[in-house]
Image 1: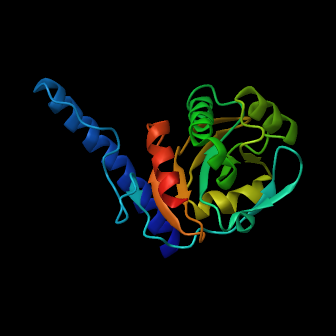
Image 2 (image 1 turned 135 degrees about the vertical axis):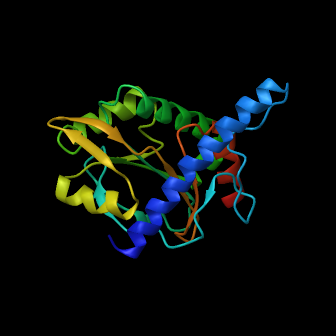
Length: 209
């Protein structure tokens, strides 16, 4: 494992530890009659989530739900939300899609100045047609690009972003749920997990806009 991947794995591990600490703190606060905000950590610019240090986001080029090629580079000048989903996911992925839809509605006209990318973690079943159907079901067709590809195309992207996808024959048994927020200059700024709220992500995006 090279240093870059090891660094990304450490960031994801840190994020999970932060969630655990917050959960334990919340339990203690509830017992004492106090409440804590969700995801209280902020980066140096005041953005909520795990600070990613502003390193350049790894490049990629895949195919979206319309069969069109999409690269990360084409979103330069816009903040980008990058997450990893699959169309047959029974729980977390649909929830993240619905949360992202709420964020787009909250942003209103500003939504057109934000890029949202969902990258498949199940190349065997995430076809272009499946990506389009999933996008339509969650009202995200015009708000994001759901990116698909072959195992050979997707695997390097998973590695670059420290995303683990454990596959059993034709299904995904587990995968890392994370949202990378990338700024207008293509730098990784903050990392959120699936417990993010639309208000939190909307605030981050407005700050980067």
